[in-house]
Each structure stands twice: as C-alpha cells, then as structure tokens.
Length: 268
Ligand code: GLU
Image (cartoon, rainbow, N blue to C red; front, side):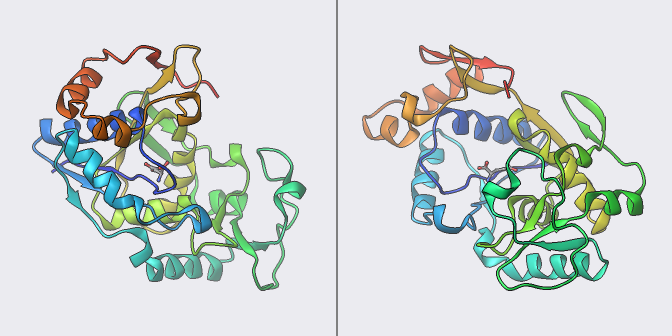
C-alpha cells in the first residue's frame, strides 16, 4: 500500500507552498488507495514552536484534507541516539566543533574529519567518503525525475547530530520515514539533493528504501521561492478571513494560483 507524508516543521506558519505540498502528498496516497501521514518535525532547537502544530492541523482540515497523524519527532529521540551510536561505532561519524563562520561556504571542507575525541557540545558529521566506500554505488528513484545515482559526496560531510538538537533533519527524517512505513517520500524539489544523503543513510542503517516524488515548487512570479515576508499569504490568515479552503485546494490542484504565484522549477 502506498504511504505518503507531509512533514512540516513548526518554525512558522504554513503558506501556499506548504498547502500545495500537502495536497500533492494527500492526493497521491488517496488516488492509489493508500495512506497519507502527517508528521510534525519539531526538534529544530530554538526555532521550533510546538504550539504551531495545532495551527497546522486546523489549516490542513480547512483545506479539506484528512490524514493519519504519526508521533512527532520530539517523542522519538531514543531512535535517533541509537542510530547515531551505531554509525559512531562503525567509525563513520566524527565530532565537529567548527562554527558556522569557520565553515564559510555551502560545502564543509572536512576540517574536523579524522578526529577521534568526544568533545562536549560537538556536532557529529558523517564521513561521506568512508561511508560510500562501505556501501558501494547506490541508486534511488524519483517518480518524476527517474533513477538517480546517489551522490551524497557533492554536498560534503553532513551534520547528523547537531550541537543544539539530538539529530539533524537528515537523520531524523530518514529514520522516521522508515519507522512510519513511508513508501513514497513526497516533498519539494528544493530537497532533491538531500535525498542523496538520505539514501546513503538507508544503506548504512539497513533501512527499507522508498521511492521519492519531488514536486515542483510554487514560486512568486519573479521566480523566487515563496516567502511570507514578501507577502505570500499564510494559510492561517486566509482561513481566519473566511476564505474557502476546499476551493483554494482545488485551485492549487488545477494550478490556478492566486495572482503573483506560479509553478516554477526550483531556482537555486
Ligand atoms: N520538515 C521539513 C520541512 O519543513 C520537511 C522535509 C521533508 O519533507 O522531508 O522543510
């Protein structure tokens, strides 16, 4: 049975892009007689505002969606610790005390690679070169983009355990998708590159391998990602002024977006 999910982080209100993502995941599951899951990704340190979860539920119900809710990430910390310890014991993680300023740039240069101490308050990074040597070549499949050769090396060694959180997005989402029985990981194209890392983690941790559906993103007419500060409407606000949620959902399905919004390729 197909199992899809929508996994918002309660860092801010949902906007039209989130609505589109939730609708795509919901409809793919229901068209295939499957299940659509909602998972609240609430371990994002100081940025996380758990009280927003109730707002998200109200927004999705207003759009006319139904879902099965699975446990939020904050209840799953033991599974993240266990997986990190397994990778650590296999010699695949190293502690990193570099500050954001020291990393300077999108690809981590590997400054701490090879460290074997366990300094307090360090982040833990995956040694991607060593990990790929242990798995050999791996592939993954996106429903829209086809079969991909996994290239986790393109982004440098990712943080799996953060200084300020028990797991990074990469580790937590990969473990949760496996625990929740997700068969089709549905999310926006902006996370396409993250899937290379997730696929590597699945190979290292003997997790089941789903398929992916990275949908196009709604963008503002100038091609930029939607952002509330540029005036893209928040779902909560639309709901509270009495907009018709199911009608909005149908217009998103039909790609008839509100003025100023279009469906674009993701521009990095
Ligand atoms: N919590 C992530 C976000 O809101 C979701 C990522 C995912 O769907 O894998 O961006």
